[in-house]
Amino acid sequence: MKKVMIALAAAAMAAGVQAASVTWGSGNFTEMPSCEGVATYGDLTGTGGATTGACIQMLVWEFSASTWVADYTTAANVYKAYTDGTLSADAAFVGTADAESYNPNITVTGGNSWTDGTSVYAAVLFLHNDDEDFTKPDYYMANYGVGTAADAGGSFINLGNTATAGGATTWTAVPEPTSGLLLLLGMAGLALRRKQA
Image (cartoon, rainbow, N blue to C red; front, side, top):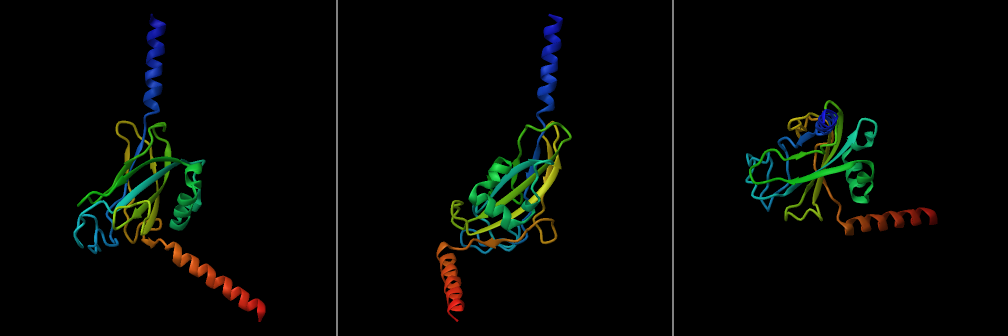
């Protein structure tokens, strides 16, 4: 009986060790495109204009120190990897959250698979759509962070999406498919013209 109790205690301790996590917070957005037709040049609390809906979605992928890819410090690389599916191949997708009305900070709690004290890296993508359709975003922005996994609710990392924060913290317009096609045709035409000359 004593051996069984010791085994159960060891299993409980092992489970407790593996329950550490990090909660990733967006921080206040200092610059934002319009939300439901209202220009918002402040944070999500509505100081620069009323924010009436969930026009921003936050997606988080977590990496260990050994699997972290430095390319994901660049917004364009994060968005490209997200659209072509390679981001989920490199890291564990841990969650998504929408911005709610007058909420200055979106949060996503990461996976509970880390040992307490482990360094956890995250690539974070923000999608913006004025009509709240995140399958067709109007703008994107990315950030990254590193935190230390902790038991009892985890540690909190505020990414601080301000102009002075680390990472790419400005919104980039998602090119429309038609404009991309026109640009490609223009470049092909220019190349053909140079070849003929």
